[in-house]
Image (cartoon, rainbow, N blue to C red):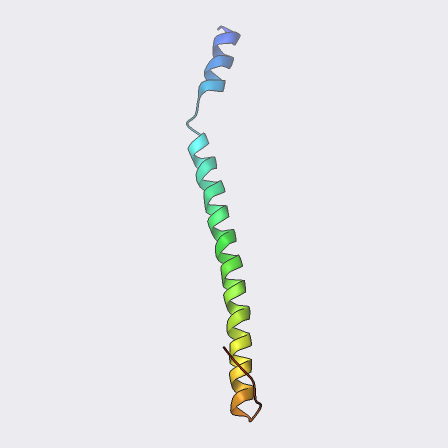
Length: 63
């Protein structure tokens, strides 16, 4: 058994690399979705509170 050839074959083997790439891409997508949902949720809450205070008679600009 030639150790040098075995080591070269191990270094050039890329079969497990695609699983790692998919895991990283999936993590980035999930992170982006969490950030977008947090931002959207905060903005929606602010708009709802502004509209509720306008209904109660406060003179606010909800644009």
